[in-house]
Image 1 (cartoon, rainbow over the protein chains, first blue to last red):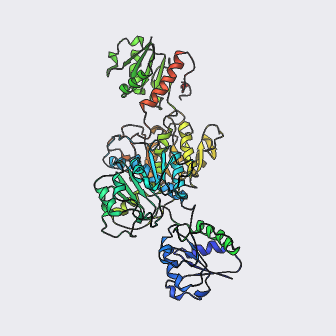
Image 2 (cartoon, each protein chain N blue to C red):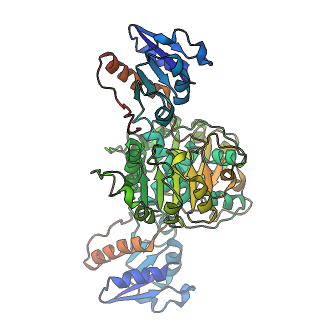
Image 3 (cartoon, rainbow over the protein chains, first blue to last red):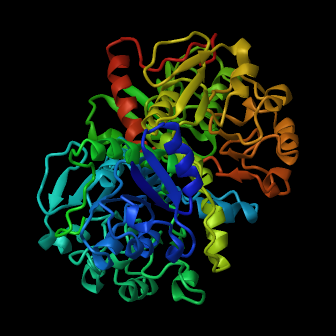
Length: 311
Length: 311
């Protein structure tokens, strides 16, 4: 018998998906709001859920062997949980959402939709000229599976794609790689920048005052990775000085972004409330179920986190 | 000696481009504002320019053998000019602009950018759920070269693409074709509809009350073809009754759209002032120059209009 504890706001959706797989000898329970009330916590083998909820449950489940995170961002586990279990993340689920998110904003700016809406409200038949994405340069910070999907869409639109990675790879969808030591010359070339980095010690505030000062004033920055990779004070300053054209932020150091935070009211900042790519229980369940079979057969799990590297 | 008369608001750009080709025995003049002042009009062999300006010049240039339109929409020639010359249109220039235009609005709606902007102005961390283009059905009315480019982008985003054409063709980017007699069942299936039809007698008001009544209420319609293919009164009624979610109109029966027209103030109608794909003199000049060589060699011109068919 394997005991699974689900620690998720979407627990009922997960149960529905997992029960369809009709796994023998699997006992499922949902974590109660107060983790102290978990029944027979010592018998729990596997956790499935959001990082913060799993971390609250872990002290009551000392014999957990494997945790499947339902979120891509697993840094909370790395920072604050014991490392005496296998942790698996989520990959390949967010690419199609993220490419739509990123290109919705790239095209919103290049096609000047806001300007056209304003002209319409004035009944004004002016014809502002729009720029094209085709031929422009998109930089991608964070060339994991999501970054590759975004790069492919950029190539579809015939953009120049440059990426930052620790080691250059051969990818048809990336024209050129820059190393982490070349961030300034990378920043200098960009019409658009998409940040998709996970939060690690190495990426903490990697977008700093120095990096921002290298951007050209027409550049548009989109952060859909983690808030902590941007020095938010430096970005606030750069935006208010028009060192770049605009920023779109999906993620923040503190979420929800507190009322009164100056980000809310900057007119060249756009906020999307951490909705760029959401975990869909059906897709996540498929990953969990595939991993569960590997777990039962004592095989290597997919998307296993290296505790030392932190991703 | 060949005499070319340029009838375009971008005449100086065209002269610059054409002179770079250093064609021997070519005399270029720009049409004056008052076409009656054209010098030696009887000697003009070739016209290059916008339809309305060319049509004004034609009575003063009775020996013109070939007119190269700088616009894709050549119906004014078909309707009102004599048909005693060869007319060539423009193709393959607008696809990359049009795919960006169409997808800017598809993603603007699916990613709810307007809603997020409103939430931001209220400092509100609500997280509305967005839909994805992936898996949705896009209908394309008008499967010429521009329609094919839009279809390819839709397939990139893993949409279902259905098209309307007189005769079904085998195209990797189109999942299914409907005939002109099946418009109602075509309309019924759509999440998004892009209209890219030229204006001909056959397409005049093809989007009528009956067609609109078949759309589902979440459907979004984009017209970037010609205004006359939509029965504008019927669309106004359908939008005000929320028979469809929204419409984006780049083109209108009367342009500029007159002040006070009810379209300006409908809250589910978006206007883009005929800017979706604009003629770029550099690209158009390349087509003209290639055609000019064919013309000199008495070969068949590219993008030749069939006067009977009207396109």
